[in-house]
Amino acid sequence: MPIAEIYGPDDFADRPKGQATPTPVAPARSGTLPRPLLEWTGEVERATAPIYERVKHVIPAIEWPLMAPTIHAINQLKRERNAVILAHNYQAPEIFHGVADIGGDSLQLAVEATKVKADIIVQCGVHFMAETSKLLNPDKTVLIPDTRAGCSLAASITGADVRLLREKFPGVPVVAYVNTSAEVKAEVDICCTSSNAVQVVESLNAPRVIFLPDRYLATYVASKTDVKIIAWKGACEVHERFTGEELRAFRDADPSVQIIAHPECPPDVLAEADFTGSTAHMINWVRERRPKRLVMITECSMADNVRAELPDVEMLRPCNLCPHMKRITLANILESLLTLGEEVTIDPALAGRARRSVERMINLKN
Ligand code: 13P
Ligand code: SF4
Image 1: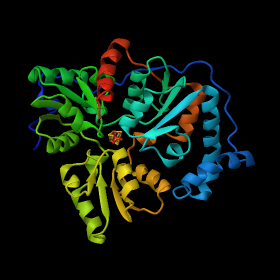
Image 2: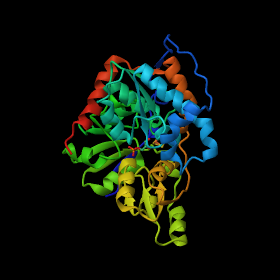
Image 3: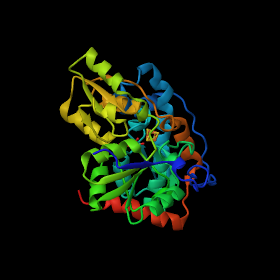
Image 4: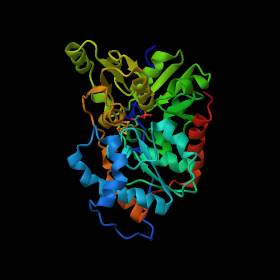
């Protein structure tokens, strides 16, 4: 079924101006550690050799001596700080395979964040992901290496917009994709990720559901359920750029090629795909099927991370990078661990309400 109705900022005359307010970050704490010497030494070469073995198919040997000293320093500092690094599947291979303790999609990272024992979480992903970790770990220090790592979906809607939608549709439950600010999460009934969106919508047992802010994920969910979906006009600036035409060109070049796509893509793209799923579901699909030639229609670094693990799968890569994810670098992860900046903070009253929406999702039985 197509989505029933769709709204956006222009549809509410009395909408307050402005974008979602990012949650403030606390100033860097005192206790900065001395900067390590970043040199390519025999010790660095030995200590990072097992890591290079994992990424050798995607990082040229000539580049390794430039990255390895920072990777080594980060891994040492993590122990010293009792810190854990969570990395989204879209992080570059030197981060995802080089320094992350836990990698995964948005749902896996949220679930893993509930189990963290370390004192400090360094979130290698975008701001809403760091907020989710903070919501689930209010007593831990959550750091994001660059606070400018935003998301076009999170920026498309405010808490005030959700209140306007609720006034327009009294009694209709509201589901927010996790790609939203804590301020928005505080206004909704439950969160979802692309791994569980259909399940979350159906768990509400309602004939109509407001699903925000991704119009394309909403369209995908509407195609999989009888629940009437009221959507918001948000979109991921990375996935909305793919086109069905681009995918058909890959098929014309090689009819045996397999194409898998993320549900944040427009419907004409998903119509051409052999499989649609969240980043974790896409990775599992590749692990199980091992196609000879594959096109992954999602953020570009994920193809590198999968190829590092499965070099026998040939990746054809229409390369769309997420500029927000790419703000996280080895250099600023090191800086975060040295200075304990930037710490993510969330107003406790708002955090309590936002946490409820995330926990309600996590507690849903499979
Ligand atoms: P998932 O990893 O949950 O599929 O999300 C994709 C995404 O765009 C995160 O920003
Ligand atoms: Fe947001 Fe899209 Fe980047 Fe994910 S890939 S962080 S949805 S802009």
